[in-house]
Amino acid sequence: MKVLITEEFLVRSIQEEFHFLYPHLKLEFFRQPHHPYDGSPLTDRVHPDTPIDEIRDIHCAAWIDMGAQITATGLEQQFAHLLGLSAQVFRKSGSIWLQTTDTDDRTLGDLEAAGRFQAPAANIPDIDLNEQT
Image 1 (cartoon, rainbow, N blue to C red):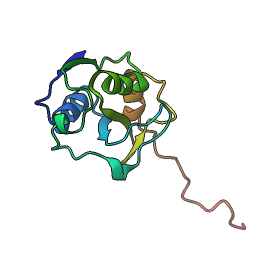
Image 2: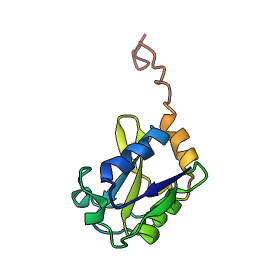
Image 3: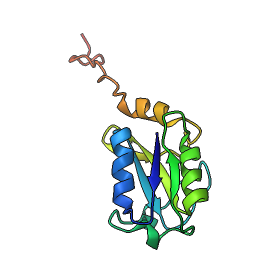
């Protein structure tokens, strides 16, 4: 799935489009770029109501491929090379969001599946196995 990003977009509109496609992933934008497998400091995060025209280095419209076969790094590099935007993919893990630093080479489809997976609670017996009988 390709999405046309123009200068009229707010950061929020890109995030919402991405989150609609991948409910267990999210896309954040940062003021400074990062390298693949590196994280971005949360203090550098761009507010969702920011117009992308204020934070990008390349001033043109671009089609961004957000298909399930694209890797997290591939998506982040498209934003950097086509629009001059520093993006970071996050994956839901339980109740927290993790930057996909160690899994940047995984596809968005694989990351969505991992975020969707919820491990069953451990079956812990009610008795104390250390009790003396």
